[in-house]
Length: 541
Image 1: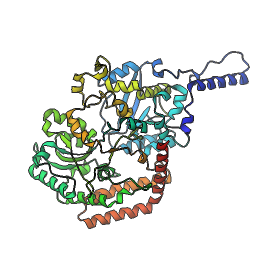
Image 2: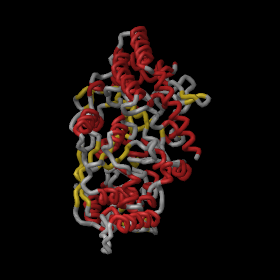
Image 3: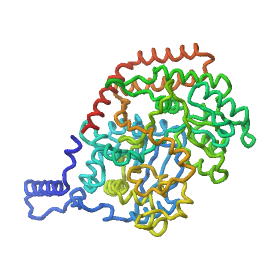
Image 4: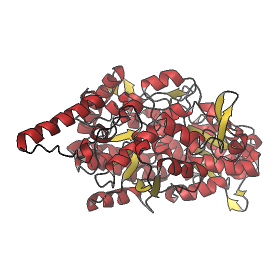
């Protein structure tokens, strides 16, 4: 409710500002001359997009905390059109190496680019806010662009509200309860277990739901296809290993095993679930039988993407949208070599997975820094990007160039669809503030190379918003403990997978459990439970 109190109308705001200015003038200055309003007191129209009032050229530095991002603004017709239309050019900056090191260095320096986009649950978000390195979006809107309140979803703003009532970031790919109700049958998940279509079919489409079936299929693939175009086959691909673990072997795998996130209103410790431990030991056995390539422990996204495009993985526990570019490359060369989604690791009851669908917390969060070169233009451009007009521009591009009204519906030209890497818009690449629910309005029919990945997830997708952003962050006691525990897990996980026996696995795992208890795991659990209950209350409202 603290955020909602800030959603005052611009008319009231302007009246207050002008009244305050008048009182200050009459009470503190006997001159009859009317003072000129400052920039902060300049009246703004709450019913019109503020960006249209100034389209002079300006370039903002926009930092994306993703080393894999390679797109350059202005390299495509859509971003060129948006710059021509708004006057805003973007200098997109990404870390050359480790994202944590880069964002930590930036925070330590105290000097920030104009915009920052990073994972919504990244510990750095809290530190940026606590260090007053980013500005409250609601205060910028109050002061410079009240039209902002007409385009945002209030529930998303409330979701990210801080105790002081301000909210500092706006999410991408966020789906509020309202969005989910409207689009539930259309929502899919990016979480998939994929196999190379031609290889899988040549092996007789083996069942890979059980540990035994999983291991046997990898063996068969390695025996029948030892090489791919002269290079060794990689039987299994995963997300990259980081200093805090491997996503594919954590929540991702737990979702495939349908391990509940809560039981009777209490958060469930999925890390200690017997089904989960059994499958981690399966991966240990896979490695002991020579079916895990050393590459998966050291490769980062660029190396993985290259190998996906080469078709060197037989199977992958991976997010399909993260490899759609490579899928398209393969499809253009040989449709038989593309990847397809199938039933993967399952629990002992062979239940359907509970895959993560769109959540209110989204996955990326965009903030405006204290060092932004022009506060007014910045919040106006953010408003534009969040608005339906901005979303449509990113999805469809320029009318008459990339799309037109065809059969009463605004849709992309077929030529553009054929040439576009993705199947839901011209520039999904600029993902910073994408509203997936809104993009569904303009999405063309999904291309064959993506339906073979995406359709499998329908009916298996769940809204896990209540479990979003549960990890404590920042320099709080719980935040420090949580980070240390995650780092301990990052060391223990590869050791468990590389261990020589199940007994060695147990020793490493039990040591981790003891370490996390010594670090104060109970305090983290208490924080997460409280946060979960708050999330449930927010969603109920």
